Length: 536
Image (cartoon, rainbow, N blue to C red; front, side, top):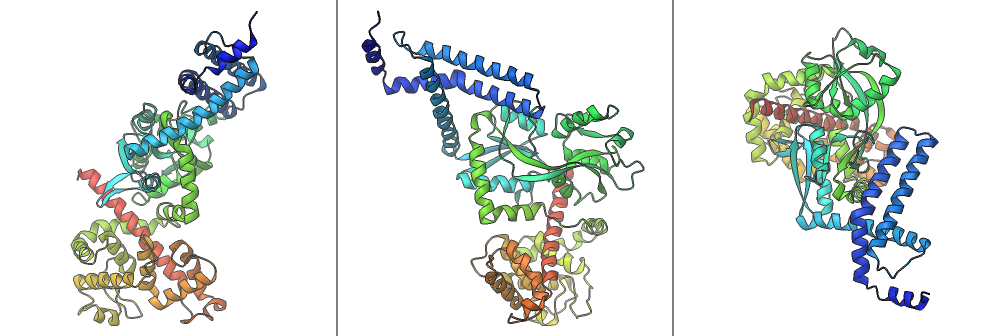
């Protein structure tokens, strides 16, 4: 007969190191694979609206997995130990909880110890690319902010398409994959996704002037529809095909959404599918692209995570909460996704003048911008908003030249002839820099130039009034996001009557800033495209 006291004594001789080794072995060989398998079973069940019978099968799988863990546990324990089943169950649950927590922290610590966050993404204007001043793109700005939050450097590697990026993450070549992707449990089995950082609509995109423009899913049978293979868009088409058996499309493994949008523009294919961010950015230099109809609304964008670094999900969520609270998220969204109402005619005109007018005056912008320390594309965008790069431009109020300077400002800046492009551009750059230096030091980053543009448009005095009004309303007077909402109030009597300098067309100043920034983004995208074409 077994002596109970002897069994208790044997248990007491198990050291803490034995338990740690036990926990690590169980987690490495059984718990983590089981947890991942269970997760994907649950995700698939939810995604497919699984019937109760299938759910029962899933729970049988879970039960079998627990039994396997229990049997594995027995192999690690001394033969003299015999735990009752309730005790084994508790041990298993505690091991799972402790090891998941241990694994998460270890993943983050490993990234910080290495000092860099490795990201893979397709190279395109909608994600990441090398611009004239270094890395650029919507995804790059988000990723740079997240890497800064982690306290590490950002290292981005290009992949040809989304499929290759996901494969790199699954293979442990990178910590995460970026590139405007949204979660689909069936499509990316084995790949975890972090929390969504943006919501987008998904559109069928065709070309303006196309004879056959689909208006419904049923109409897609009459056009040549091409999508990226193994993408969320193709997954959606497979779902729709159940209701529309005639629905057909071509899938391209080696193409990106950006490439397919260009093929639509070139009339080489009829239509493709893109999300609203991809389309908005691409239309900056392919303005003939247009929405045929919306396929899905409010879809979540998220980053794909390496199975070894799923702990990044919690870090991303904490980072999102932080940048939403401090206003960084709004700034990033405003910079890349809020392009305002699309103006087809204006966009075509601007792109045409980038080719026809800019080459002759680009050296003047570069010289002035270098002397007064600002991006030359920013200075060129201000000039286009003012005069459409017309050196003889003149307004009824008397401002003249390519930078539309007043006579008084021209004299202060040493401009003898406002119709001389070189003098006008240099004088405008000097004036912008002078205004920027008068912006309070608490205003930082791009907001300094945004506020300088407000002053350039309606005067520094009215800018002071707008900042004072913002502070009175409990808003951040140093933030462009808050100030932009206040500017139109300067034209309302109940507000301007209490201000020192009175009435101002604040809505025009807000529009001026937005237009300049939009032109700058389009110009930079066009220049990046030209460099990629010529291989510069």
